[in-house]
Image 1 (cartoon, helix red, strand yellow):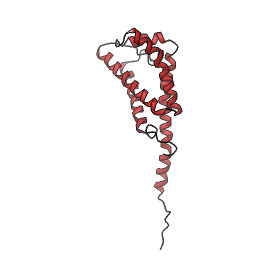
Image 2 (cartoon, helix red, strand yellow; image 1 turned 120 degrees about the vertical axis):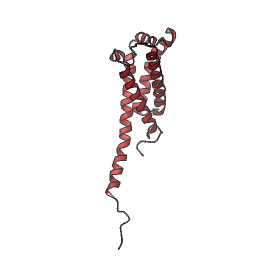
Image 3 (cartoon, helix red, strand yellow; image 1 turned 90 degrees about the vertical axis):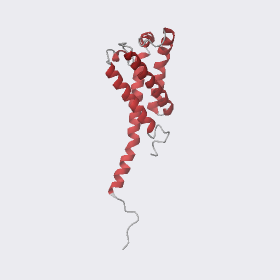
Image 4 (cartoon, helix red, strand yellow; image 1 turned 45 degrees about the horizontal axis):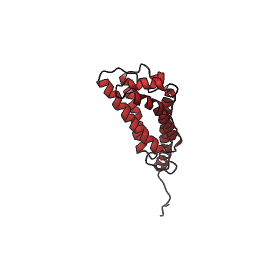
Amino acid sequence: MSTSVHMQSPLMNATRESSARRPIMWVALAVVVGAVFIFAGVTKIPDPEKFARDILNFHIVPWSIAIRVAFYLPWLELLAGLALVTGLLRRGALAVFSVLMLVFIGATVSAHARGINLDCGCFGSVSKGMSFSTHMLIDLALLGALVALWLSPLGRGANSATR
């Protein structure tokens, strides 16, 4: 009685199909997160003075810094978002966005703790009137997605086609 060396369990094929879909899931998540930051940057680019006033609402930095941040940050969000979507310099984009999210969350919590009711300006006029809870939920979801991407094959620098 001989058994074939090439016999496989039906479950092995299911595992292969499941692992073949994982890179697509990570790429999709990267595209969604990148698109959120592209949108955020694009909404702020047309009116940097308004965005600078939104930054001043946090009462953390003076006008001279707020206006500089307002001119450069939207472009950074746009370019890093494009990097995340296209996969070019993805790890750099993940690093930029992780730091930005930690700063945004820290600034928001600090302002809230000091009793400052603010309009963050994160998404231009779209975020006007957003509650603290909603703002934090979005920020924490984005941070969670960034952490997941860091831990994924994409964040570790592995080629998604080989995983």
